[in-house]
Image (cartoon, rainbow, N blue to C red; front, side, top):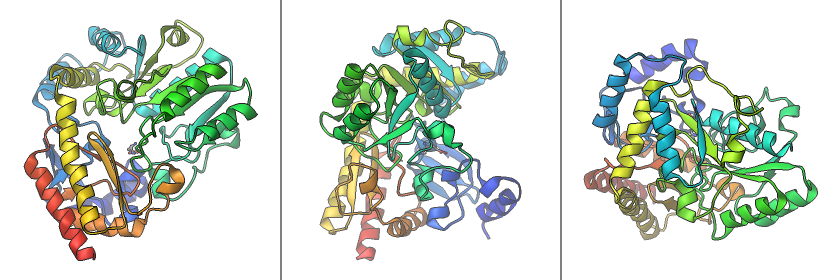
Length: 427
Ligand code: HOZ
């Protein structure tokens, strides 16, 4: 028995399912999760000392690679000044100034501790601002685990094959309406049937929790136009795409301006951070300035701010960094796509920049129903092959692969060889 198996045996005795977040559990690939002991740059090492090329990157945050020296130094310095004060600090102001001066759609920002919290708070703010209660989300989009958003949600719910969660009162989801990703007519129909009642529409501008699904040409602008016309707020959930597909996320990349935006993952540099922000008149609704209450003992924590701010600074210092990431993405994901074609594999590759996913279905994937056609048993075989050869992938068909600036040509070449090896043997 390996060390991971030993640790899992202990963990299941005292942690539900042995893990602190369901997507880590390896249930859908029928294995014991690898317990991790350390990570550096693009590599991660398990408790038995086995090293892997890491394409999970903590589910997105480690865009500059694990253990970035500059981030580490800032965290160490911050820790020595005290871990938390529950009082305002200069670095929170620096973080907010840094963001608002570089993100044209963010006039004001509030720091929280996770993407879930950011989204939950943005929705409350939208409801407070509009005085309306209904919200629209898309099937297959995942916006964290707050009650009203656990409806046809992606990520771990999709992996488990359940549309929602037990324990969520019907009253909490009765105002959550679901539309079809990439289908503006489904959005129009909901607005028509709920005239003047929709507070906001929330979308992952590139969906990355039902696998990776790109917005079709005109989809995001269409959402912008409908929301403007109907007096509803458009919220981009950029917890995954923010600072990844461009510094300004999908809003910058696609040139569509949301009213509110949520961040997480990269903004914390590996520490637990989230943020929501947007137009001044909307953010002025938030307490203590306005009547929308939202709070947090550790929000804006100085150690977390030190990590996040340094990570964001690194991302703005190299004007070419997103091109570099996109080139790595093209080499890896484009390379996988070419192999899938060469071996006539019944798979579809969706990717954008440093974010990608192989769907084990031959059909185009542009929404939740398409994604659900993927053969999860075949994915599990592929996953086990790759893990056994030293590639650390998310243990679910419905999660993304992430690249960092530290992934080398050699890492990518090795990964492509192993994909080819799998495809040869799968034939
Ligand atoms: N959004 C991530 C998965 N798609 C979060 C990771 C988690 O749920 O643990």
